[in-house]
Image (cartoon, rainbow, N blue to C red):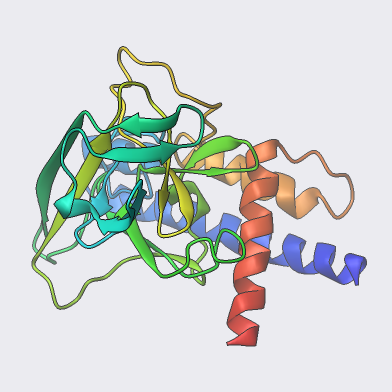
Length: 251
């Protein structure tokens, strides 16, 4: 069973590596500047931003955040409301800010580091989240003791780019505490907002920084059937990918 899992992981990673490479080649059909941006930031449609605090880390309208009074919609939260934070304990909200994301370009796509990502129920673990969760691509989730921008974990099954076909705009909200921390969002552990320029992360932040980094990761996973030199983020990504496939088969 373990050998079959390794074989499937290797095969899947090879296909994914090809996909990353094809995406980079496709970027050559646009201007040189745009192509460079897309190769650096293949997942966000250009712009040159990697994960880990470079984009807006926000929750879509309607997301339920655990507070001292139970789960409440994020748009109803106010400064002064108390929330349980993983590292800081019960903490007061200092700020709740929102922005509206618009479709862009001739094809009307969601693009950039704020591109929405849907984390399906149970994608990160049992009841994590309890129901589907939509956050921005650069928003980090807390798993295995580290923070990972969710875009690095997109797998096409349990964690997917949100299409929101019925919407032309999406409203997003972020929650700021006195210090960067981890909140409970519908049962999933997600980071609060932080100013990455001046504030340290509350936990180690792991991220792929562009297509080349992602390609190297996929090749390490493909080669792991012979010698396993995967890095921590590779292992997290592969584990959640395998969980997503199991959830899909059980559906």
